[in-house]
Image 1 (cartoon, helix red, strand yellow):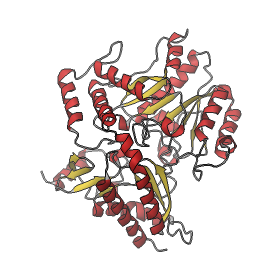
Image 2 (cartoon, rainbow, N blue to C red):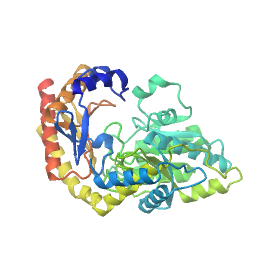
Image 3 (tube, rainbow, N blue to C red):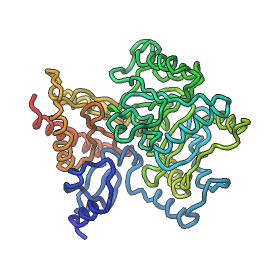
Length: 454
């Protein structure tokens, strides 16, 4: 079957995710193979996967060792649940994650995606407080423009109106506070920052005794790779401790090496009460997400008069094949020094992206760390002219998609709060792949400048 027929079948039978109809009507690529940092389509063309799938293929495509672990597990034990029993892959994955996680974050509840991980954190926070005699603690604080998932609970915590509006009303009792846009490095005492003081204001307005948890990403994806200023996360930890609120670090993107560390703790220095994860745990070789919880909290829930069980689960949670993939993936990353590679290469990537900012009038800002960056676009940084709405739509729907096809470098245009280009290569990308990535970005920015007058 040729690619034209495949596209026709896809348009008729396959429901695309977050895809506009005009994109689905175009000559989108159909991929057949992955090799390292590249995807190969039906016509044999190689595309550099500059987004690591969706921020997830950390160890790269086509790993025979991970594939063998998956195949061996399917042939040995394809399925068994974690409801009143256990199996070796889930035990091994949970034990390995506990070894890598900071502090006493030692218990993992496995699910299947990042959205489910956030749902699990919401449910654990509510049930934990109820088990401790505080059933009124149900409210959640999260940050403006933050993305926390698509299921209704996770979507309630998400701070992006555009993707929330079609599904309201959502969960009540969620308050959003300012994010850290525009703040980086030493900005003075963190507790004096407006974005931190706003959190305490909301806590006091709602009543501390009603707040269950505060959700934040170590580096916020929505609004474009927002790296927190110095002292921000310690200030969050201090606020949560002061008011007995659970601190949830949403690390669906940030964990397992994306920032050059196993977890956000390597960047923030703070041990949260819970960590959500998904993408990089298996490098996309199988669906897996999870919630890591401080062991003390789990013990207190189980041992409480109203506890004994965390009333939550999923048929596929801790699936043998998915957890076997996680063990193979994380073991290989550790043995091959993948995180050390990211930390070594990240300064070069950062410097090169900032050099492109200087070279292109259409770049307003470059933000990020590790192998996770956003390039914010404008019409002309020399004059300060921003893109008009029409120009932004043209860039996102016409210029960038065509540039991705022309250059063979797959990235992602983003319209969440600004017009941006998201960059997230596989963590195994070396000098050749990063050079290919940077040449592609350079060409994309040139295309934007040709399409948008200064």
